[in-house]
Image (cartoon, rainbow, N blue to C red):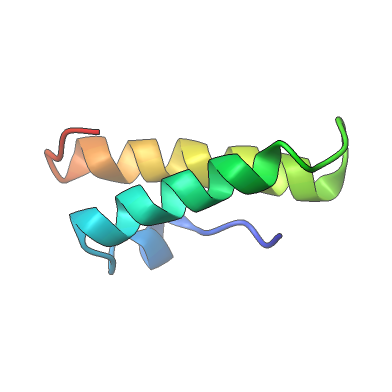
Length: 59
């Protein structure tokens, strides 16, 4: 999994952000602890939350 950046996420709608968060969380469960893919998934989730807060969306 590749990490999404804040600037990439800023282009998405609220619904797209929510869907991406759910998809990323589901993917997270199948990744090994400490793997690059897992770190990328966690980074993406943190960035999604950051963008949601910046844009005033509720999660």
